Amino acid sequence: KPELVSLYMDSAFMVKDSLKRVFDHIVLTRANQKLELEKIALETERLKYTRTQQIYIRNSIIGILVFILVVGLMLFNKHRQEVKNREIAAQAEKERMETDLQLATARLGVFLKTVQLKNSELERAAEELESLRLSATETVPQVPVNVTEQDLEQLQQTTILTEDDWQNFKLLFEKVHPGFFERLKTKLPGLSPADIRFAALTKLKLSPKEMAGTLGVGADAIRQYRSRLRKKLKLQPEEEIESLVEGV
Image 1 (cartoon, rainbow, N blue to C red):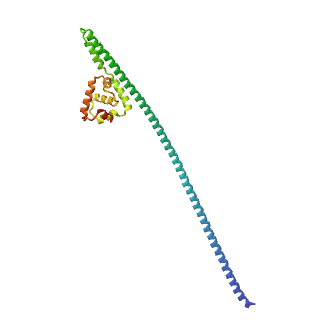
Image 2 (image 1 turned 30 degrees about the horizontal axis):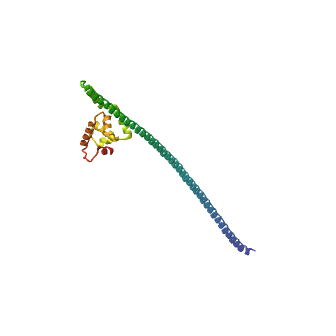
Image 3 (image 1 turned 90 degrees about the horizontal axis):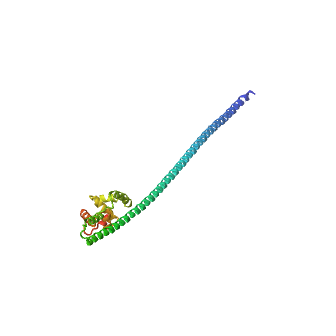
């Protein structure tokens, strides 16, 4: 039936075209789906890479913080140990200085006791010589008394605090009263060595008699020292040398 051939061929072509369009649509859809899958896969990889980087950065930051914390703790412990060592050293130095001060104070006390004993011996010897001189004058007037008087004068002028003793005394005095002589020179410039010795003995609160025996001079010389020092310092009548020296 030739008359139907044309009709069926047109229908066949239409079906073929329709199927081709459906196939092409399916192919295009699958291509788009594949492209989307590839995009999703790339995005997943990117996210995984970003996540890995974030984890690495986080771990690095945590590691750095832990390292800083450990170093900080080590430095803190080191500093605390250094402070503790300094405190121990300072305490040991303080105890040593206190021990030295106690020893120096004790030695200075022994020195003062020695001065007092020597003064007592000098007084006793002077009294004995004076008694002998008077006895010789009363019983045997024709015997000259110059020898006993000279002995008495020599005994009174005996110097207990010699130059070597003074140097040792200064070292001992400086341990008990640190910086006294430097402050004395700064506060009261122009003092003579005798004035300085007098000031040091005044600081120790020695009596005029003890000062005289210590310096090997008479009581008049101590009064002269005091008077000369008052003139040098231009002290008012109500001002005392003892108070001035005590404030040095």
